[in-house]
Length: 354
Image (cartoon, one colour):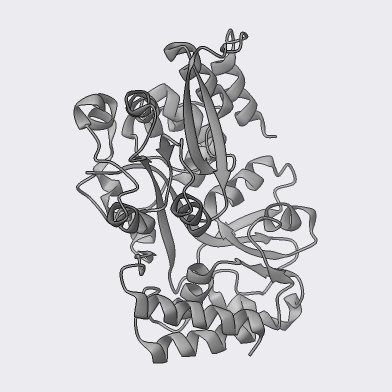
């Protein structure tokens, strides 16, 4: 665990020693793993005399399937932007009352509109932004094109690389490598992307969503296709300075995970309070220090950059507008069954090895 995480969690948790009793209200949050600082949660519990219970998912599709199957009791959910329209269509989430979100109104950085699909924020408030790129070993990849999707054709790295086990991310990567949109709806382009991924597959160790975080750090793998927040966490923990992060020059995925409130939320008032709490400047600063991802709270980013303890992190997670322009936001295809089926069939062919 890096020192910043300890500082962020410990400082906020200080003095919050007593657990909440069973009579206290419970707020149920369904989110990605390691995505909210423990100290932030402890401070919210103390302020609102409640318990926060966090469940996690590893993909939007898994989260959606669980809710669709009838799982209830959640208050705050954190889907990626592209998943929100289908959740609205299925009446899974409720409209937000922005009168109860004063911190959001005051602190939201409008520059992050570029990462969002629904800029009305009728149902959604942005939480964190993630870019999809490469974690790589600087001492093991000399001469390899670590700034390009072509890295997966490098015979010198054969068996020492990984691709995300994610239909949209990996097919999208191949589409980008060919100069196409990662949201392509053309069968011929998707078929061409399948051929690219099958060539890449010959060179990788495996498709993976978790192991790359530690495998690149340990030197087992030299390149890992993954999410910027995970990779920057490993860089912050990297005492030897051998881990690098790069974005492919052909383009990459930009994801905005957002906060929404379940339609059947048992505690909608507390859910609004939680969302607004996370937009407090000091709270968001601590959360960014823990999660290692940029969050669209303008004063928090300034605090992060001004603090010597977190200035390095601030420099790593700051998103340059020119770099961001090469990114593309994933769109939802659940409302277009024909296109979604093309992607599912394409991914099945990739996994089967065709």
